[in-house]
Image (cartoon, rainbow, N blue to C red; front, side, top):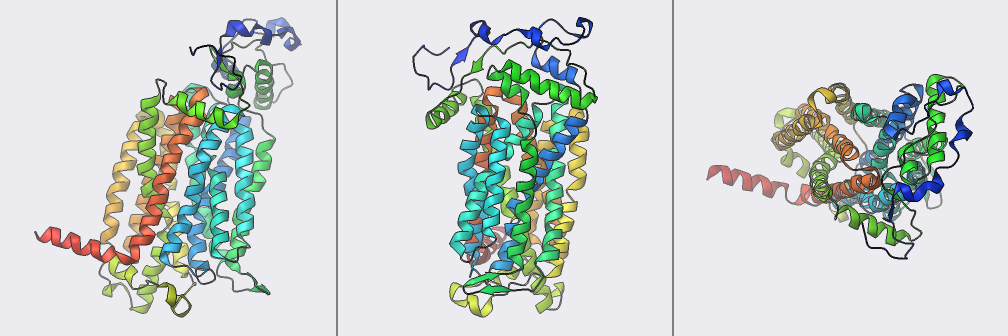
Amino acid sequence: MMEKNNSKEDASMCLKSSQLEYLDKDIKSFETVSSKYLITKPVNLDEAIEIVGFGSFHYYILFICGSLIAAISISVTSVSFIIPAAQCDLQMTSVHKGILNGASMIGMFFGCFISGYMADSKGRKYTLVICMMIDGIFNLISSVSQIYPVLIFCKLMSGFGVSGITVFYSYLGEFVNSKNRKKFICWMELFWTFGVILLPCIAWIVIPQTFRIEYGFFLFRSWNLFAVICSLPSIIFSYLLLQLPESPKFLLTKGKRHETMDCLKFVYRWNNNTDDEFPVTSLMLPDCITEENNSFFNGLYNSILELFTSQYKVVAIITCVIQFCCSASFYMMVLWFPELMNRFRWYETLYSGPKNMTNMCDIVSLFKIEPEEIDLKCNDEIDQSVYENILIVGMACIPTSIIVPLFVNRFGIKFFLVLSFFGSGFFAACLYFISSSFESIVLSSVFEALSSIGIGLVFCIGVEIFPTEYRGVGVSIGSMFGRVGAVLGNIVVGVFIDAHCMDIKVHIYRHDYR
């Protein structure tokens, strides 16, 4: 226990249950039915959640949270279709494209600190609603961007909003008991896959349209409409999330026993479709509850400091390293797939099929555009096959998204993590040697199917390992390091794909010769 001080700004102050007897008010207010239906002794929260049962409320909250995860998937990866469609309007080189791909990740990097702290101090639902509204609003603003810096800023703020993705796992997991938690939250990966599948369908319908709305310097084309549509899910489903209760585990760690009881009653009545009174009359308070901190920055600093000085510091560090590595490889590949596939397809069109191809570096180098050549060489048309290919890649993720939650309790999260990391790493290395668009599709599909489950499983482990008072900050800091990897990966690809891909190839050949 920390030394006593009079500061009310100490966010980590813990008070023993015996010191909070004033919170244990008259429980008789809950006893509105016959005592034979009531559990008169205090129960812990896991027991109370067991009594609540698993039913229609949990399917509904999974649908709402999953839909918002799909909205995040659409928001983050939509830029991969905007880039080739808007490159002429915004005069983008490969470096500009790499920076734009990384803008959302930079926003997520800074947002992870704040969303994690807010989730632990202000509430899971409160944080999620604010974050998703920020994402939706700035994606909507990005749809009318006329210059490159405005689009960059909007994607930066959108990334700040979607940094709350880690909080969904905490929020959802705290409504189910520990026995079923892993399996339940693993289904979230399936919704991410739905977002990946839905995105190319929207792009395929909207982006090929040739309309132009011009008014002075203002220009609105199909890619602008595409950005509008991609912003709507975040706004719509964040409003539906607002109607749901706060996490009962969060409420109880704040000493809000009566609010926790109200939440459990709400879920109990929804699950059982009954007006009967919730049989639990009293909840045990946790050994340590946290006070709200009025100083935002002081509370944020204290939360991070406490995590890395607690017994969970090693777990936090390992989580950060894993997130950095898997996010770097996943996002830098996924966000560049449409661009690379587009270059492959145009090569096949211009040079009469795959027989003239050598390897990836030879092909992408033919479509290098220097800043002074944008107006002369720029082509913002996306080949129709690119939409088909990205759709195939997304659908390839469905089997793994279903297999993992069905078998995670039998084989364990660690088994699937190792399979994900080793498998995706191997197939990513093989991408260098592809010489046709068909090979690109196959390897890209396998890579995304394996790598996407890894990131979600790391979030699941964080929810399982970190206690309630550290869960938001612990998972979010891991995600923050993941965004660092994603930013570096995307910028590195943007810088090196045109300038140094050939240099890397020559170096490899020389190494093999020696």
